[in-house]
Amino acid sequence: MKEHDPRLDEIDCRAAKRDLSLLVDLECDDACRSRLEHHLAGCPDCREMFLSERRLKAKLSSSCCEKAPSGLRERLMVEIRRTTVTTTGVDGTTVVHQRTTVERRDLT
Image 1 (cartoon, rainbow, N blue to C red):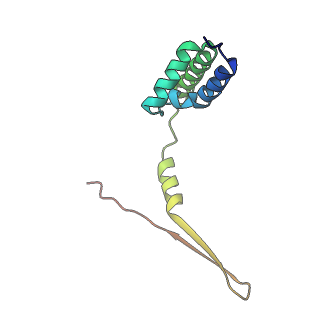
Image 2 (tube, rainbow, N blue to C red; image 1 turned 120 degrees about the vertical axis):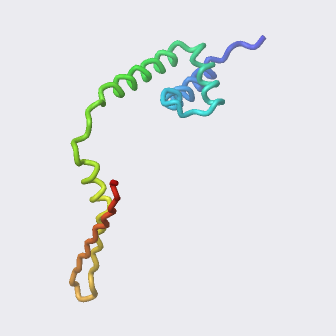
Image 3 (cartoon, rainbow, N blue to C red; image 1 turned 180 degrees about the horizontal axis):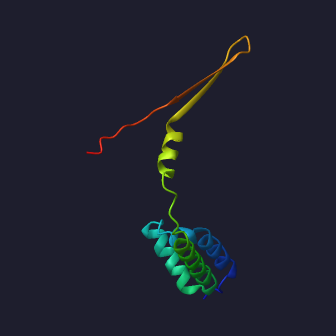
């Protein structure tokens, strides 16, 4: 029987640690999830790192409950719709054109 090569574990751990955030964020496909779960079942160090990242995500999610100030969305949408074009002529004069697109909605 072949002797276990510890370098293989290091490679697996590096790959697992690289992809842990995908598992924490539920963004990995089934094959990736299966591979990571299999690795975590046999690797206490990576499992602890995974649990730590999951706890951190939960704390961040629960601490970000503050609502944005009223009117912020509207102010942002105005800025997004505002277009500024600056043109410099051959004689060095600068002309600034600013346009704001307003979208009106029928609220009835």
